Length: 507
Image (cartoon, rainbow, N blue to C red; front, side, top):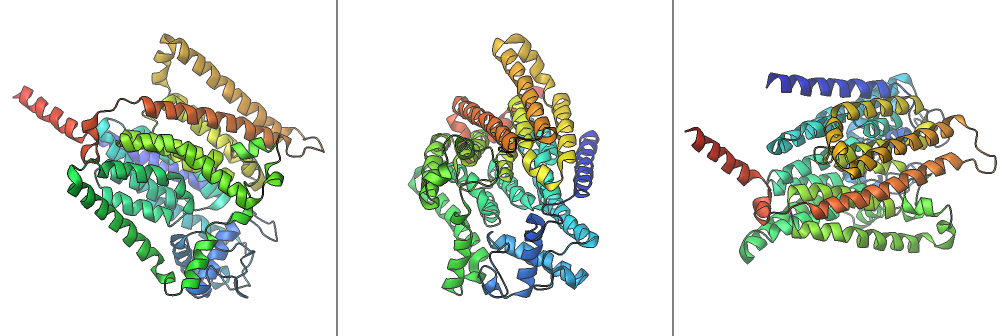
């Protein structure tokens, strides 16, 4: 027991240390006027929320130019910005002075902003990872998931390097998964609604949550059990959204403007060189010029929903926590590959569900997490974070080889399929090294300045399609025990029976 506690503490301390080391490097848009980057966006939202009335947070006014990093996330992000802004104003009013603080940069402010991300991690994401570990311990798993959740490089490179607060919404998401896996359906519903109200990108995970809970409702025994469960869950959803949005509900125009800001169709199909299907296809077919934004958004919506339905309907028929975790990864991969307005950072929404499957799929999950980190290379080069990306990717590959993959070596020696898969894995890493090295060291042709980032995006997109197909296959071939879905758990009753049997044998 003491050894487990010390190992957990050691992993947590290493995770904190790595995050702080990354935070010493540059951030998005550092010293790059006039728009700077995501760091300035977060600072500007603090400026807006602490200086303007709530009715103007999402409105275009003389004091709030929406063309300059207008607030475009749900209310929980705005409330979080308000709290950070109040702390900033108490420390140094110039951090968030209205109009005058635009593009504000200083070492003291950088330190303050980095601390806000670290505090969010410590208060929410770290406890979420620990809760997930405790939940998965029922099935003799969890420690590998805990390590990957805390040490996956992509998350802290984006949050503590590039600068965002993804750990807040992802922490709420992990807590929601842990709650549902522990029979706490109402709590899990509330937590996921909070995650969705912090970042609308949690829509990536919405269909699996919906179909899992709907499947649980249908297994309550009789129409009354179904209705009672459905009413309780519906009440949780309505009350959570009501509490979050109530301050905006006093004025219909304010509410409508806030909702409108959450879905920026005018931003286009994708940002920069992202490893999505549409970006890769645009190399051959200029999708952006052939189809206008509104119609393209509809095409993306239809293709995403159609491709997500098989996994979601399968989950509805087999609502176990194990199927649920696979469905979350499958849905988020489909969303990343086919949805509208995708950027590099949204691969985190697929990477965190992959971290929840490392005990089930150590080899494939480790491979996917490595590729997902490498896909961030163009963004990290732009932000001056190339060195930490390379160093942490190498360290993560070494960690997975030492900690996750040793058990797969024996299997690889026994089956021809796994021999082929391991060889493909090493060829895949070689391809990442080649394309990454070319993007860093080789000057591109003058007529093709984005040649290597585009090639890397296409290469990673091919991997993501392969992973999407593989994890769909895994979800559909998991053995299903109908009794395991009762009461929203798949092993609680069986584990209790085993404990009773052991006690009887002992007596």
